[in-house]
Structure formats: structure tokens, C-alpha cells
Length: 426
Image 1 (cartoon, helix red, strand yellow):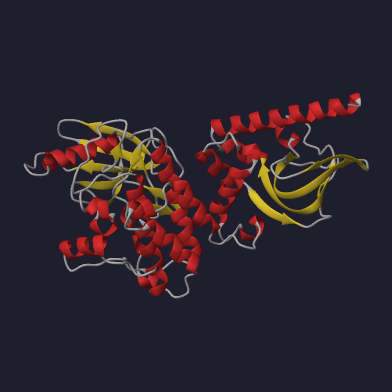
Image 2: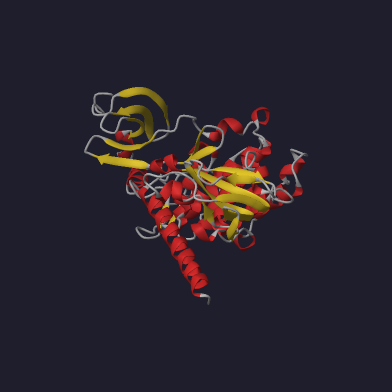
């Protein structure tokens, strides 16, 4: 096999499934490791399942370059030759989250919820492209670090813009929705059900339904009530139970009707009575993303671009009276208020009072030469502040930088117009 992939030197074999094997390889052209899924050629010739395997391969290959989201495993390239079919994908070093679905290896609740939150954001992005995954399970969710996740294996996906024929008998029965095990039509709410089952498994180390055989399992999924997660893990809060059970509702109309509603409930689980900054370390990315969405400064940013902002920023809480910036001091970061209020003064004269969503210290980014602060900035009402080092903006996407430029220009134009009105005495 290594000879067939000579342009990608093989480092090691990662594993294999029913129709393919996966290798960790080196991509010398882009100087990065990649994962390459190589299809077993004989599977395409199988008289019973050959057409299905080929359909799955071509479906996944067709998504190359399309699913670009921080929490979806990217497909870089696909090759379909007479005797060789393979897909070149992003390499994710942590393996799957299956290891955390055992009773003796459960994650802290906050980490499990954050993983599911990130999955919901990725799957909403996919849905906006007309894609329903249809095979969501821990084995298809990769991770790196503590809670960075990447959904993979879109071979079973239903793509609304292409061939809408629904392949039957696709997916893993234990994670399938009632309509899917009955081979009825599916939509994104079937994926919502499956992610609800994954969340249940992550939180408890057990599946909600387990049968001695596939017939027993299907009957339970379609007829039996699931025990709430707290029955297996008593420390779980009622709010957690409510989210999981709504996602797993037997009737589609009783589930979350869209991914945004699911995401909001997850983000609110740990929200009551705690500020963004105080929660930042325990529930970082999900809470940050939900806050960024509410700020006018970021209204033109895409979901993926908001994730970039969440990852490069530092969030801090500040009390009233705390100085944040001093006139003439050097500074290499700018700030945006998430909550609260700050006042901007110059030589004791009040210039402005800023509220949530407004930036300050932006000349550190906009000025090419002089990085000194042009005014004093002090907290006037308890605040949560987003700090963004200008050097880190060089690592974000071009679209993200463009949106920062556009947002700053709009705010500077607005401030200039207000200053002109004050000067004219209007």
C-alpha cells in the first residue's frame, strides 16, 4: 500500500473498517501530516454491497474542500482510479471520543457538554449546505487536546443539492433515530437525535437502549422510554437531563427543531448567575461564541470566523474603577467590551463612554508605526472584556481579518460623525 501512496510517505496505519483502511501519512507539498482513507478495491466488486460502498466513497469524496469548519475534519483531496480509491483528510492526533464513553473514563460534565456544543455548531454549518450526516456516533467524532473536536466520515451523508436518494441501512443502530431504524425519510432532526444519544453515552458511559440483538434494539428505540441520564449519573443537573431528553424525543416534532436551539440550551446549562469571564476557563468556547453572536461588532462574522476570534482572545473580568489603558503607554492589543461600561478620557477630559460591543485601544491594530495609547481607559461599571493581541490576527483567515477591518471602519466613521456633531453644536 505504501508504494501506491508514494507521494504521501506512510508513517503508520491508524486502523481499518469494513470497506477501507486509514493511514497517517506525510504531505511534503504542504508540510503537514494527513490521514488517508484507502478503499479496499474488492469491496467495490462485491455483488451485494459493492454499489453501496462505491456510493459512500463518492459521497465523501464529493465534499472535498466544501466542509471548511473548525469542528469538521477537512477533506483535502480524493482520487478515484481503476485500482486505487483514496481520500486525503485532515489528521487529528487524539483519536475518537469512544474512549470517553466508558463508565470508568467519563469526562467532567462541562467538558462533555462543550464537546457536544461544538458538534452542534459544526452540524448546523453542514445543514446550511444541505448536508445531513446520518451516521453520528463517537467513532466518527475525533478530538485533539481536551475539547477540540472534529466530526468525520460524511460518506453516509444525504446531500440535498445532489442525489437525494436515501440509501437504506446506513448508520449505527444504537445511535439511530426512530425514523431512521424504520427506514423512513430523515432530515437534520435525525442527526439531532443521534447527537443526543452521543451526549447520553458521554455523560453516563451507557447507551440509552441496549438489546440482545438488532430486533430487540429497534423495538426499544421505537417503543421504550429512555431513562434520564441522571438515573445513571445522579450528580447530573435536571437541566442536563432536559436537554438530552429533548434531543432524543421519539417524535421529531418534540425535539429541538434546529441546531441553533440545541446550541443555545447547551450554552445556557452553566450560565445562571455567572459572568462570561468567570466561566471562561470552565466553559470557554461555547460561552464565548454565544456572547460574540450578540455583539454588534461581530454581526458580519461567520460561525467559523467567530470560532477563530474565540480561540485567539483572552477574556477577563474587571471591577469599576480599574484602569485598563494609560495614555502614551505602548500597547500591542485591543479590546472589545462583552459586558459593562468603560470611560475614555484624555488629560482628565471625558471623551466618551463605551458599552457592550464597542472596541477600544484599536490603534494598536490600525496604526502601522505608533503603538502608544492615545487616551486613558477606565472601567466605569463592572465589565467583561475581550482582549485580542494584534500579532494573533496574522494567524486568522483572510475573511476574519477583512471583517475586523470592516467593523473598525464602520465604528470609526460613526465616532467621527458624532464628533462633528458635537463640534458643530448640534
